[in-house]
Each structure stands twice: as structure tokens, then as C-alpha cells.
Image 1 (cartoon, rainbow, N blue to C red):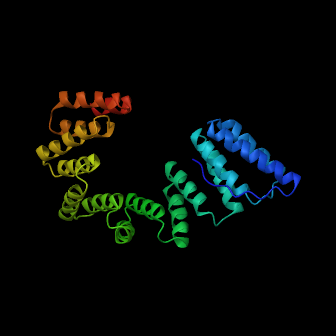
Image 2 (cartoon, rainbow, N blue to C red):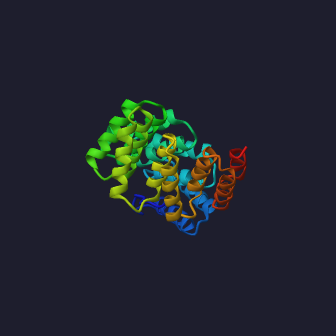
Image 3 (tube, one colour):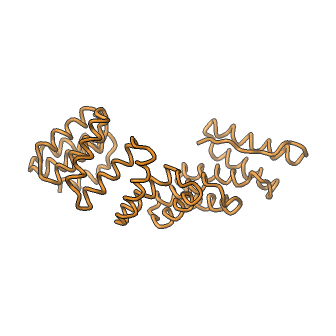
Length: 266
């Protein structure tokens, strides 16, 4: 949540008061007093509307608004901050992530691409752009971004997972299975990899292999609701509705939406 804020020295009385408001805002943030913090940041900006640090205050306010689920307002704050400092890639990443969260993949893609124009090796932007390309079924561009990441970071697990799922969907099932098997050899204690392989095996109707992998994932992370949901769908496909119902109940216990789980069993 917190990051450094370059504030001008207190050479003048007005600037000293500006700094005071910002410090009060930071102290309120440390206490999780979000409304108070935002109020102090706005007081600082009202005191000096042209201060060079105002773009960072907009970033603070945007993050506060996100935590308060005021997503439209947060988007406006990030945009206001970028209008003051278009070169702030950190804020552009914040806005891109928010666009993605709001389902606006096109605008998120634009922001991530703008960051990569300035910082080609920014892994956060590269990984998210690859994911969005994949979601948009632009497989060629997604593959190029995943390949770039893996070339720079050969053990980047998230990039490999993205590439596995892309290959599995893009007519390269054998390659995808070889890759997920290789990942599990490298990261044998990562439950998500077993869940992913289980899903791939289910897709191939290799039900017993899929069940073994999903059981392993559940054993490793027994409070992960997603794994119970995955196993429930497998049990339904195997016509084991009683076991599926048990898994949906466990999924709800660990955070899954009850309505979604009820609809799954219909």
C-alpha cells in the first residue's frame, strides 16, 4: 500500500504546511484511517494545487478508493495523477490493474503496452499483457510475451502456467502436458500445478489421473475453495453427485459463493 513520496523541502511556510498535511495523511494510512487520510491529502492539494508531488497524492487517493470499492472514483484519481505526470509507470500499472479488475481489457491492454514501450523488461506489465492477449484469443501475441518472459526469467512459474494453458487451448495438447509435467518436477510442492494438470486430464477424460491430481492439490492446500470447486466438477462429470455435493459444501465453507455452488449441482 505504501510507497515513497518525494516532497519538496519546507523552505516556505505554505510548503511546510503542505508537508504537514501529507505526513498526517500517511500517519492516518498507517492506522488504516482511510477517510481521514484522503481528507489530509486533499487538504494538501487544495493548499498547493501545483505542487510537484500532487500526482502521487492522487495515487494514494486512488488506492484508498479501491479499498473502499469506489472503483469509478479510483479510476478518475489515477487518470488525474497521470495527467500531471504521464511518465509515472507505477501509476499506469495501478490504472491498468484497475481497468482489468473492472473488465475493461482493452484499456488495460493499452496501459500495459504503454508501460512496456518505456520499460520492455517490466515483468508485471509483460505478464498481464500476455494474459489479456490470451483471454482475447490473440494467441500469437500472447505466446510472444510469454516467450519473452521465459527467455528473461527461465523459472518464471506464472509465465509457464500461462503458456501451458495457452498451448492446451491452441491445439498443442502434447506440448502443454509435457510442460506441466516439467513444472511439477521443478515445483513438486506447488498445489496449483496439480490442480491445473488435473483440469487438463479431465479435459482429456482421464478421470482417474485427474482425480489423483486434484486430491493431491486438496491435501496440500485443504482450505483452498477453488480446488474443491474443480473436484466437484470432476465428480459431476464422473456421475458422483454425492461427492460433488460434499465438495461444494467444503468450497462454500472456505469462501466460495453459495449461489454459484448451488447452480453447479443443478
